Image (tube, rainbow, N blue to C red; front, side):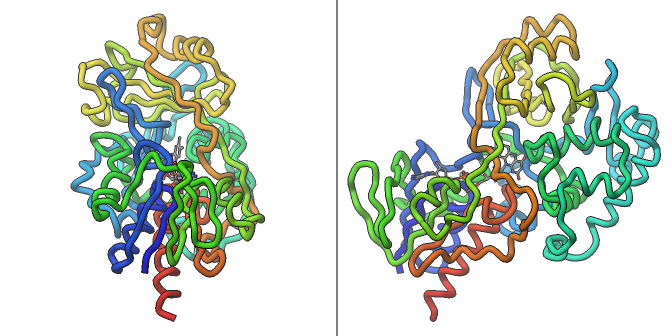
Length: 410
Ligand SMILES: Cc1cc2nc3c(=O)[nH]c(=O)nc-3n(C[C@H](O)[C@H](O)[C@H](O)COP(=O)(O)OP(=O)(O)OC[C@H]3O[C@@H](n4cnc5c(N)ncnc54)[C@H](O)[C@@H]3O)c2cc1C
């Protein structure tokens, strides 16, 4: 059997890996100059810039089964976060993993003591049962879920909005509570990491496992007819099966059967700066607990992995959820947090990412129920089929390959 995979993001790479491992002859066409999709790392002035701040959670079940963690040389963040609130820096950490910070966490202005105890309850609730069972829980928005659990407005504003808003790229917390429960469980049971050489090492590991010649980069597919794809160059290729592993708008355009799939995505802006000294020395996330100003979260990747800079300077990564935020506004906000020295920080690059994450608001987040079978000979995968995450993209790619192999045996 031969297969064409359109798109070399994580889902397409995983699908191609599973198909090749089963003896299928795979051609993967990727429009960009390298595979990785939304997980790419650029080298700029000796700094490694992930295209948008993202992290890898070691507890992701799909990743545990498929990735070689040692080869990724994972570097961990401190659990929890520093929170900029009322002109001060507070600390909220996981007291199970960092008991020495229990008092600081309890006394933090982000939320009441009751809120901190409620977090312990959420940890217990989300760690019970299987992950599939989590997706059967009553679904509502994350904000409704937090209100139902009794969290105070101050805890939601100072911690949940910047932390999970930064994860979902959704400051209003309209994302499905099922995704919240899944990710809360992952954050409670995982190391939060980046590969030493940048996030792109993750897709690269999958790419390296493919046979030579499987991947063709700089090769945009223009259209799909039956099981024949036409490339931008005009070249045509046919196969027994075609897998659409692109973002949903292109997949929908080619496969009318996907008309019901949403093409709504959340956007994000990420700015990188070079600083002669780090604004703080811990490998930890900093959150905007005031809800004012353009910055949602910030970190110093060079405190997590020294390989992110070759010059000895620090790399600062700033995430803004409002894509209208300007460099001047960000500098002003940074100066409020870290003082006049920010004026010397060198702006390296800004990434505007319009298709960052598929919108996954209720109702209907139920990954296991979405079939990758579109019609005979045509399949689809991507994070929009599962959860908007690296784990979700992997799960979708795996399920797609399993469906193809199962159908081929019939
Ligand atoms: C800024 C940001 C932060 C994130 N943070 C996290 C995080 O912290 N943790 C986490 O788990 N997840 C995070 N994610 C989500 C995660 O990166 C994605 O869910 C995952 O990478 C999606 O993989 P995919 O294969 O579904 O899609 P994509 O990576 O989008 O892959 C689709 C591929 O198809 C290609 N393509 C499109 N059209 C064509 C065409 N016509 N012909 C050929 N090729 C085509 C594209 O170039 C792309 O390579 C983040 C994403 C972003 C952008």
